[in-house]
Image 1 (cartoon, rainbow over the protein chains, first blue to last red):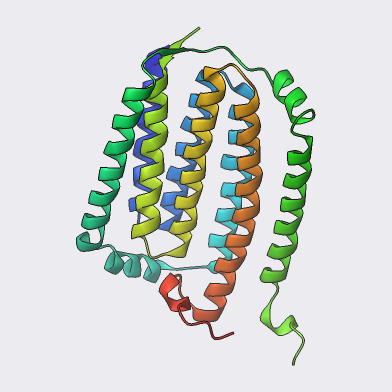
Image 2 (image 1 turned 45 degrees about the vertical axis):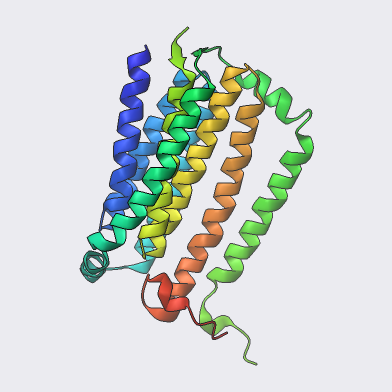
Length: 168
Length: 102
């Protein structure tokens, strides 16, 4: 079953590269959904079925739908693709890809030195995760709920229309 | 069960993170920058899951749940900011907002 991991990893990497090189935002979003689904498969293979389900439901479902809603609200036409094509020049990419490649090579060398042993995957069940979540990490859960509330209030405040603002 | 090499999974995480970093640095469209941040958060989450599997502990998955909550909050604020930017400047270019005019 190891080949499934490599296949999913190849799909995830390909889709992620496609996300950052597309000119059309909707195409990039579709590739992003594919990358997230293959990552969910990787999580499943790594013995985390609960996280795999959440990746599909929350990331590929809810968060990507938010992105789609914003694209629909902005109603950007074909002129945005033309603008992207003007910004998409090789001279910008070359240097940054070179620098990021150096970083990646350093990371790969460090990781290859560090952990030579193969991973024997034992499934961590949702039961264990829930017990841990509502035991030692209870304060973290409460803080996450506060963060989400702050995000909700902030998004509501920023998303109001201009003319509803009180005049100074 | 399966025996996936630990360093291969971590290298995949590093590769995804680097691709997200390149996307964040190169693109000028704020929409793509936000998506690149999502890619980087996912890569970090993958590293947490791998570490949690290595030691057979649920802590890695708990950390992924926190990353998920963080990403949801960050995306809602970021998309609201994108909407305001587009209303104000009629463009998705981040450089359009380089002057703080209040």
